[in-house]
Image (cartoon, rainbow, N blue to C red; front, top):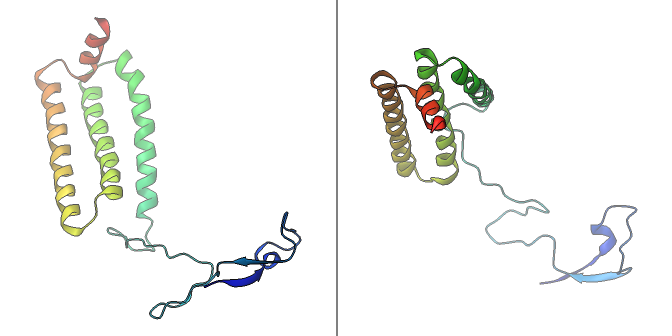
Length: 157
């Protein structure tokens, strides 16, 4: 189905079409289906409802701010770990790196995993991975040279 529409009615006011000055045979702007309501010049956006917070909550904003603070803290921990390595910095790095990885992989899961069962399994797997990562880094800090000295040893060779 086609409709005859003046091109100037589609363009903004004051903008003259470059090639066509009269009517033009174009596809219709609105197509009506029997079971759907007409939505002229709009698109339907399918979004999932918020899973963890209400729509009036500022939890997402606080989470975004916490991610940025953690990223800046990781930037600051690099030089501090180089110039003054120690157990406090080792465990701080273990916690910060694990949390940074957990939040990053959580965003990947949010973007690419769909379906209730798959989301629950992926979230459980992420929590297990983050727990094992933190426990492994703490074990390495306690029973071996620690994160700071291990990186220094890697750079020295």
